[in-house]
Figure 1: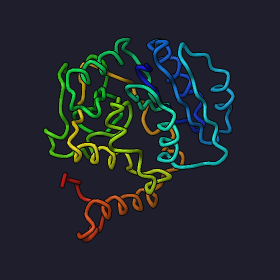
Figure 2: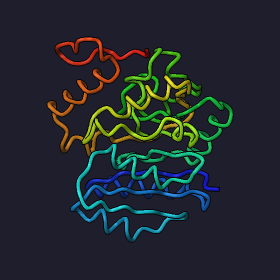
Figure 3: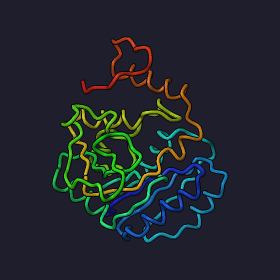
Length: 250
């Protein structure tokens, strides 16, 4: 049985992808697997991935067209066979050798955990955001219990998802493509299905933040996805001017 399926999406930014890969390479075992989906990079990323040697099985998908992150994630998820799926952005860097073991341990201790994630730098959410490893608070926080909602406390950088949860909830909602708040939508779906989202504040992962999205995301695109998000979760309410309000659980 595969322990962890690591899923990484790439679109250019080869220098960051190399950092991400070299750092997680040190903690992978032969019982893991890595699934890459490249979104038509033109900076040598595809060749780098094709020649990559890792200590576990590796699948590289080079898409013939530029797609949204929802479509790319769903492509990767369909190829994952691990007991856990680790969403590992290409602008992350592992700095603690026990990262996966610790996150898995939380899952094992909490059978109702759908997603367990570490603290990160440059990430939204007061319970996840951490400047560096020395600022860890060494506890476990249940996001839905603290805020009574999953949004915007839990962006998808460094999520460890239980395969059983993914199988129940399904994949990313592709209506938010090419880029939007599909991860917030997914977090709400997880919580509303009765699963828990936990932050393991014993673990820190370095996050450079917005390396890919900053290249093509604009205000018009974000506003469109906010409207779609609000319409999906509150179809009988009028979308407020100035953007969506803080989203609450139904």
